[in-house]
Length: 52
Image 1: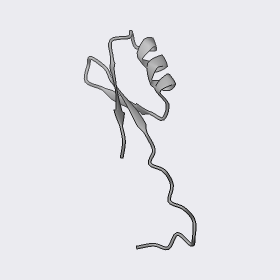
Image 2: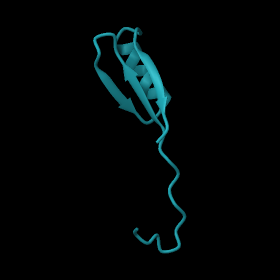
Image 3: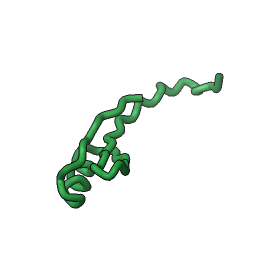
Image 4: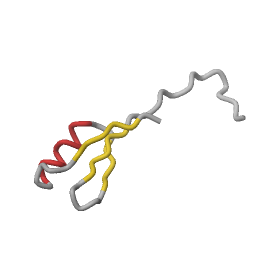
């Protein structure tokens, strides 16, 4: 196990996954980005939140 040298561990990153009706998926770091991409793609996609 690596040494963190006294640093606190980083918090987990939340990933917003956009799944489009054609089966393709994209990952975004903010919900706003995922919603904007969904809107550009026609608004029929599904956004799910993934916590590591």
